[in-house]
Image (cartoon, rainbow, N blue to C red):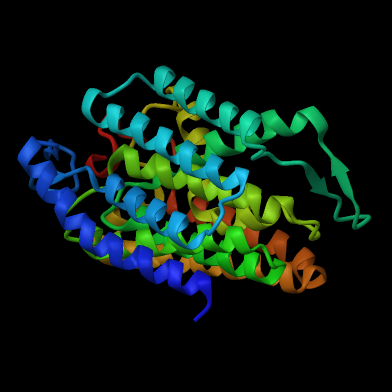
Amino acid sequence: MPTFVRALLFALLVSIAVTPIIGWLALKTGALVRPVSRSIHSRPVPHMGGLAIFMAFVASALLWGRAPVLETWGVLLGGLAMVLLGTIDDFKTLSPRLKLFGQVVIAVLVALFFDLRIIFVTNPLTGGYILLGAWGIPLTVLWMVAMVNVMNLVDGLDGLAAGISTIASLTLLMVAFKAGQTHVMILAAALAGSTLGFLPYNFNPAKIFMGDSGAMFLGFTLAAVAVEGTLKSAATLALAVPVLTLGLPIFDTAFAIVRRVANGRSISEADRGHLHHRLLERGLTQRRACLVMYSISACLSGSALLLISNPQAAVGALPVVFIALYLVGLRAGLLGLRDDKDKHRCEGR
């Protein structure tokens, strides 16, 4: 059995075993998300699930990663820092500026001291690449912080963030397998197993939420694995691979930013205009809305794999994919000016 398969299965089993324990601990300590007027859920739910995902990921990555390279330690320690920051936010509700500052500091430290940075971008016109030099650090920080907040924003339905993260992790795993990047394969497999094991407890009706600690950890780790994998590959249009892999939350967040600016609101202020909210408004249940969004994510991930296997065909298909996403967003009303003010976070939105 390949090592990456063992890493995935081990993380899966650890996550399945640890999540109920974390849920019990959350109940004992009163770490609950309580329903309010506009909450989707109707009962108090534990919100420390991110710890279970993190523990399963780290255990698998260390066990099967053999001698971790410097970048792997960056992923692990950076993920730990994000979990701690998210946990503080779950209990104390940090201001958006303070939370963003913490995310930037973590990303900067990881890029500077663990060599986890984007070194070059490929030029699709010539097939060559452009060295970024010192510009690689701010680009890496921007990418990581953006993905942390993208995943946090998409965490609005039972099982949505965990399911999308599983699909994205498996996609990054397949890309790393094709490129022969063994240590990246282990990280992607461990992340896929940890989220997949958490999903049965988090799918509607959720027994536990991942909280900001889980969403921020997933966003950071997916971004970091992409940096260490596809963004260090010389493949043509390598930058488009992680963008497509995480395309659904990225585009949903982009629409949210445009929508909030158009409504004269802060881009950090939560609302009920995300795609999953629109699907619920159209009469879909939480489960069906999740499955629709899983399907969209799977299609985008398939496009990313096509890009790797057949770059020439993908170059022509990419504009069609982006136009289709834009039209879907318009059709769903994601750019509409109608916007309910709502300051609830995560699954409470």
